[in-house]
Amino acid sequence: MQLKFLFSSLLIPFFWNFSAQELPQQLPLELSSTTYKNTIGFDGTHISKEEVLSHLEYLSSDELMGRRTGEPGNIVAKNYIVDYFETNGIDVKLQPFSFNRRNMDYNANNIIATIKGTENPGQYIAITAHFDHVGVGRPIAGDSIYNGADDNASGTAALMVMAKYFKENPPKNSLLFIALDAEELGLQGAKYFVENKADKNILLNINMDMISRNDNNEIYICGTRFTPSLKKYFNSIPENSLPIKVSLGHDGADGKDDWTRQSDHYHFYRNHIPFMYFGVEDHADYHKPGDEFSKIHPEFYFNVVRFITNTIADLDSKL
Figure (cartoon, one colour):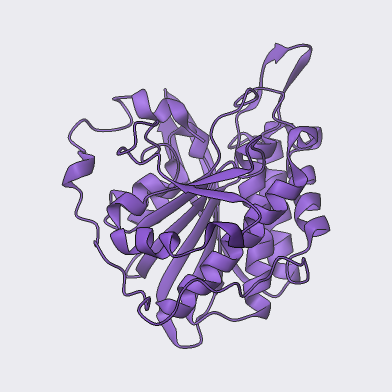
C-alpha cells in the first residue's frame, strides 16, 4: 500500500477532484430476484488454505529481499508467479514498462493472466494485486529486509489461487488477474496498464492490498460510495453469514482515512472504471521489517481469500 502517494503533489495532479469523477453510478447487477450466494463455500474444499499460505510465505521470505522493483528478488517473484500460471494452464503474458522516478530509471513488469468468459468474452473484470514491495532498508532491531508479507504478498498469493480456481470453474465474463509491479514507486504498474488497456471493456476493478492480518477480524471494502449498486449489493449480505466482519468505507464519506488514492485501484477510478478495494487498516508493522509471514493471521486471511473469491464469482454471475 502506497500511503505516501496521497501527499505527493508530484505524483497526484492537484486538479483531480474525487467528487468530480463521473463513474458509472450503477452496474447492471441482477439484484431484484437474487441476493448474495455463497458459491465457493467456507468448508475449504474449493480453495486450499495450505496452498495460498505457501505462496504467501515464499513471496515474503528473506530470499526475495523485499521484492523491490528492478532488483533480483522482484525478478524471482515475477518468475515464480508466471511459472505458477503456466503450470496451471492459464494464459499469461508479461507487460514490460519503464519509468523514471526521482532521477532513477526503472524497468518493471506487470503480469497479466486471462481467463476467457463463456458468455461475454469481450467484457472483463480486472482483479489486481501488486507484487512489489520496498526491498532492503534501514535496520530495525537488526532486521533490514522489508518482507512485505501483508503488503502485498497477501494479495498476490490470493490472486494466484483465485486464477487457478476460475481456470477450473470458467466465469461468465472474462477475468484478468493482474500482478502489478511498482505500486510502491507511485502506482506505476496500474497507471501503465490502464493507459495501455487498448479497447478492453473493463466493467469493474477488484483490488487487493494488505488482506492478511487484523485484530478485529475485519476487512474493509473501499469504493462502493461511488457505485451505489455495489453498496446495495454488499448491504444485502446478512452479517451472520460470513466468518469475517465486512465493512464498507474509507472512501471519503465516513470520517476515516480516505483510501481512494492509496493503491492501484486509483488509476481505474480516475479512468472512470468502478472499483472495490479490499484491505485492512494499518498495523504496527506497515512498511517495516516486522511485516513478516509469522505475523499474519492465517484463519482470517483464508476466510478473506474465500470471501473475495466468492464475491468475484457471484458478481460475475450477475453482470
